[in-house]
Length: 237
Image 1 (spheres, one colour):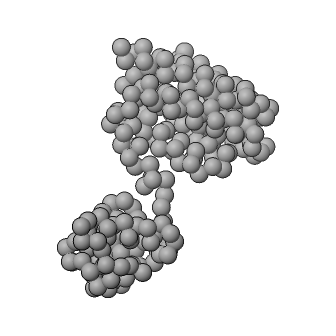
Image 2 (cartoon, rainbow, N blue to C red):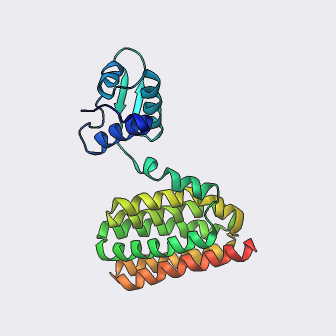
Image 3 (spheres, helix red, strand yellow):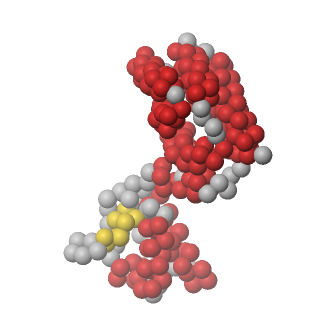
């Protein structure tokens, strides 16, 4: 399964060998890596080097180290959380500017809405309309329900991504919308007017999705992102 690690970059080689074995599917989620003794012999590395490499693999989410009888390094199933951890940290610590975030979201949100218009089933449209009705109720109650409104807004964007059935778009949407609150809190004023405008935008997008208007859904989603990013950029100045 493994071969002697290259001594010139021994630690990195150990990590890469085990990582590639997992990615290639030679070790499945739930399976346990060979014992520490066996790995040391196969890789021809010290105990310290092996343990350090295993810790790095655990931090990457590729394995979980379980202690005790029957324990060991257990292969984990990769989730979107692990894949997008770096992007999430960039967003949460605001290392991505509003302009950069807007450029990214315009393209992604537009494409997702277009695909949703192309692929949505009647059940998908019913789900979107149900969420839109929740957004309407919170918008009518006013700015005291801003957090609730923003949460439903997030669920609508995630629902559109899920309609695409594309795991990349779904993953990216989760990462962005799970972490974008920091920007909203710092730069977005979501009073009654903004809530109503946001609700109107979402309703127009969902209507385009229901009518299978691919280009319309894309353009509406792009305009929606640009409008609210403009509000945030003005407050940032």
